[in-house]
Length: 130
Image 1 (tube, rainbow, N blue to C red):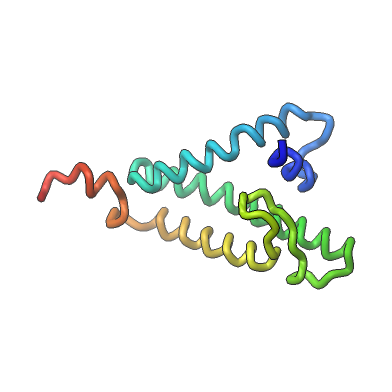
Image 2 (cartoon, helix red, strand yellow):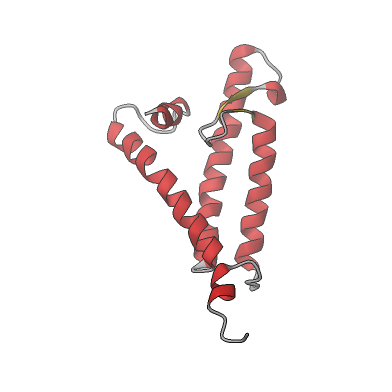
């Protein structure tokens, strides 16, 4: 319920369609966990990094918009705005979260174009050469 309320604060979905908000609150955490597991195990790495990129890009734009909105409402400087963004870390500074997300977006791009599987569990667990 708390995550649902945080999603509603972003005003990205019409309040007249509560089933969309409920679906987002129920599915987003599982989609993120699934992408993380795929990336960690080395299965469908490019697809998982692409999905993670789209999610992160959406979250980053939403956080930038929410930070600007709160800055305008409170008269606080943009980088001084702190709020609960819904990421599970509690109240965070808007600019710090944006920088973190940009770093993660760049990492997604790197994973997408990289062919290396050095850190993938699948390579280490199921390697044919020992």
